[in-house]
Image (cartoon, rainbow, N blue to C red; front, side):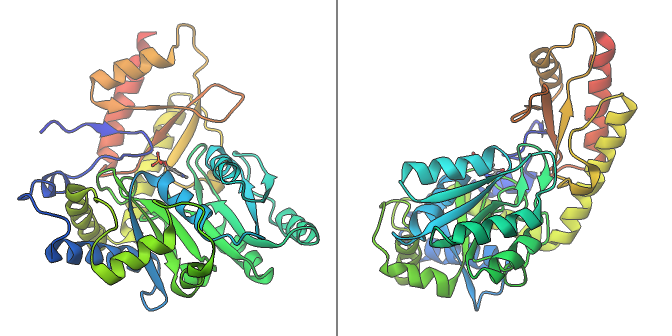
Length: 366
Ligand SMILES: *Cc1c(COP(=O)(O)O)cnc(C)c1O
């Protein structure tokens, strides 16, 4: 099979074995065998970030946003308010979800290119607590729009001190950046199958503190399909998902989890970091500039300013690279014109070097 190099921030490049794992005999997902597979996957997903005695994973068919929406819509009591840290398009998306459900929230805006002011977060939380019943703090771990990494451990410490639950969108950090939910004070963590897990698109999940999750059973429901507790308890009690799961994607995810267990999260982090260092070195040697300080980058995705060259055109560059098997991605939040390169997936530094060679050719063709 042709091997495309995806440098977009997910779905990421998958291994041949993950692709092949999807080709299985047809099976009804209500069969015990398939229920067992989903429970195995849920357990594996929990273990990547937490101890299964205290945490469990809720699975949904859907892209990552489905699980973000499931948590935000299902865990906040009617009188509660969410404090959202918004430092990029994904933080903004959490606000849009809360708006859609008419759930009360306050927002702390911060630049997607500069580290979050933790002192200010602490002060703002204290201030808002005087006017609102703040029950949750919601934050993005790796803000994929810029490549900025929020210091979740420090944020978790603040949440703990204020006695509020922490919701983390770890879509583009899970599987690549070591996370321990308990130590970091995280109650709910969200991710999906197709980023650093290197599986196929179609499954999103929430790793939840069991005690907190069970306590949400009593809350009035705001929705049906994405209701977190209902989805959780149904799989536990019936060994099935409530609705048709993406069957073949689950087989691929089981394989992807096995490959992650073999490589380990730390090993994957080191490989991604080697990819990222190769990328930065190459970009700088082409006189390109990046937007986030090296120290607070996630090592997962890099925002790059458009080169200052006559004749440069992003779409032309995209097409030039695409024809050569490299898929790149436009920028998302910035006043400056940017594009982004993700270095996740089943990629090695040699793949990044191949990309840099093609990029150099394009720039020289201008
Ligand atoms: C990719 C991503 C999402 C979810 O995107 P989907 O297109 O719904 O899979 C959410 N948050 C972050 C930080 C992401 O990187």
